[in-house]
Image (cartoon, rainbow, N blue to C red; front, side, top):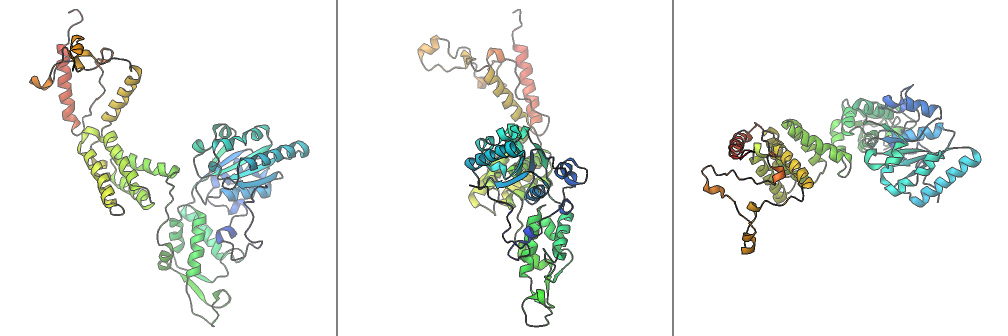
Length: 463
């Protein structure tokens, strides 16, 4: 089976209106490719390698609509090597091995290398990616992989070490506006024949909506143009492209086409973790405005509200703890509220919790205490429980001194005793070290008094 041709046009005529505008307007030169000047400006290493047909294996990493496939097409048109393109969505290991065998034969018998473009390479599992490795190492193929996911997590370490990663960034609004202006003025590939009257601010609004994705912007422009009503007719012909009729696109029409902003978000991908990280760190930095913004980004993009609630519960213990014991209760209440009333009504409960957690006094003393205790628990896992802390429900256990020497805290005026509760090797450990913020300030003073009293009561080494 031959690799699926990703670059085949739906129609041999790129001017055919059945071909999407985004496909018709795909850049054909480096100069037309917007927003990646740091990689493709004259003199930059990647552009020079492509121009000189000296490309080595690379991974193109970036969000959708930033030019990964377009760049592969430019490589295809400029290289003298055999160029094969296929997608991880449509290809399996058997097909990969067939291509690898052909690449080896071509290089040995014809002295020609093969450039293999693999779209969505992150969709291949580790075993499938391993099939590329021998031929990459032998120099039979130059791998050009494209991915929207972080290659550090999605590409085999061995394959990644033999490839150079190039990061393509989301396009800025100004770049997208330029792309849209080209589409409106291009009579051959774009909408130049459509006689469109576009109000000021519309292209900028589309650019902001697109979130750095040129394809989204062009699709939205094409759809908006398709539903635009025409006016000032000179005849009864409904085709305004061949008459004096003009279709107007204003912000109101755009809002009808837009309906709901499609936020860039993948609940299983890197953006999922980027946004929850931004929320967590904004709350930790006591910035309620930023925290509410990142929360809204997640909620409006369709994130599971219970996942967010669970993260808030974790934050209440990890970053606030006993500095404000009410934080955990409020986080649990927000979780229960979301579960009880659902979404979207539950968004205010989440917002209330996020604001409270953001402005609460911060302490990671609980988190640090557990982490250090867990470390010691693994190291000293065989340490027995001291006899005086053991229950003695049977006479045999009493005869073995279970419970001997136990001191009942409530029998003492201060509500505590000088009894050691840690194993002998861990005595004097201080896992919980309260801060001087919030409630922990009073707790720190209380614990300090107890520790000082215990220290005085401990027998001296020579006693």
